Image (cartoon, rainbow over all chains, first blue to last red):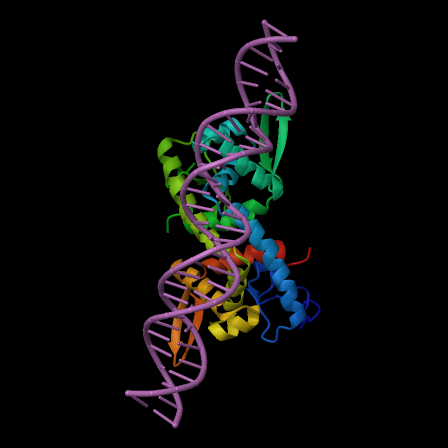
Length: 130
Length: 130
DNA sequence: TGAGTAATTCACATATTCATATTATGTATT
DNA sequence: AATACATAATATGAATATGTGAATTACTCA
């Protein structure tokens, strides 16, 4: 089989990539791969920490359906403006949201679809009743 | 269209569920749905907090390919036994991993495939080189 | 320019998380 | 039973995260 990907990052998919492959390890993982894995894990955990907050999760969820102003988010979350702003700044730092100024108000939208990809699964696990 | 799902939990899929629907909101979200959403967000953020830790993420990643003993994980992570044990206890509390005793050693495995589902996406975003 | 609005930033108090060290528990061996 | 080993549980302090209110910036309009 194709061995060209076995050392790409210490992880090797167990199934074809087409069906959203599971992250499964080789049994004989080497030190080099371990380092790559640790680096990947750090980036991933930073991302996950950014979204693993009740308020930020709801912000991202609301932004998934289109851009919103800070005031709108403030109302949607029933939270203080300063708190919302700080949560947005955290998401901004992580590059997950992008501000757009229009006169007095600032509108936020999702920078890319990374949050959506995660939230699809989160939605399935926690929001859809089984 | 089908309106029977519009109030299930404050979220409404924008596409057929078959293709992993996006969590998108109705424009006229009501207070009741907001409460449900907040409750879902809290459960989801607890789950995400549990996995958004470099060490715990790597543990889950290793467990994805089969059960491992604490000592094995200790070596795989190059971490102290106490640290690994504490991270495992956190994952145990959250119900993500399950211990199985065999003599002196205790083997851990994933309780269900929730972590795997998230990690599939995380793997795609952070471990696969594009 | 001055007042009003939207959003950010700051400073503080509190709460949570984390790593380490220590102690406790359960199991196998003798 | 006594010992050794693998793992778990607890305690402590340091670091980090969070919400709040006050001060500040950026913009609009009269």
